[in-house]
Amino acid sequence: MNINVLMPVYATPLAWLRLAVDSIIYQNHPNFNLIIVDDNNPVGEITDFFDHLRDKFPMIKVVRKDSNSGIASALNFGLQHCHGDLIVRMDGDDIANPDLLKSHDEFFTQNPDKHICGVQIHLFDSEHHWYSSHPCKINRALAYLKPGHWFVNHPGIAFRRSAISSVGGYDPTPATLPEDYALWIKFLLAGYTIYNSESVLIDYRVHLKSFSFAPNRESADWHNFLKQQKALLYERGN
Image (cartoon, rainbow, N blue to C red; front, side, top):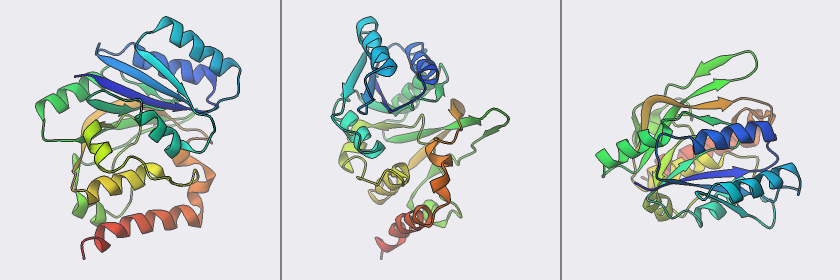
C-alpha cells in the first residue's frame, strides 16, 4: 500500500525536525512519500534543510505556502499534494516508531472496510513520561457519551484519502483552536468509526508550543469550541 506522510512545519527547532524526518525516512515500510508543508518559514536553516532533503531523498516532497495562515490551512494545502492510498499525519517535533507505517499498512490491508486508525503515543518532556490509552474504537454515540474530548491522537493517525476527501478536509479553524477535534466530529457525523491501535507508535514532545499543551488550551474559547463541536454529535441526530 502506498502511504503519504503529511508533515506541516513552521518554526520548528531544526534538531527536533531532523529527528522527526529521520524517523520517517528509516521506517520499516518501503512504499511511502513524505509530503512536507513549508508553512512559509523564513528563509534560513529550515529552508536550507528542505533544500538538502529535496536533493538527497526522492521520496520527499517539500511544498511551500505563500503565507502562514494556521495549521488547518497548511494541512489542507498538503492534502492537495497527497496521492497515496493512505495518509498518515506526522508533526515536525515528534518521533515515529520505525513500525508506524508498517502497522498502518497491515491494519488497512486486513480491514478494507475501515477508514481511520489512530495510535497510542508516548508523551514526554524533560522530566516526565506518560502514555495515552484510547479505546479500540469510537463511533458517534460513544464520542458523545465519553466524559472528555480526547479519544484519538492526531500525531500518527492514518486515514484513507477517500475518507478525508468525503468530509472536505480540515475546517478553516482559527489557529488557536483544535482543528483535529473538529475533523474527528466531521468523520463521526459522516458515519465513520475511528479505530485506535493498542501500540505506542509516536513519541510526542511536550513543550510550551505543543498545540495541545499551549496556554490557550485553558481559555474559555478553547473549551467553548470543544463543547460546541461535541454538541453537534447530538444536535445533528435530532
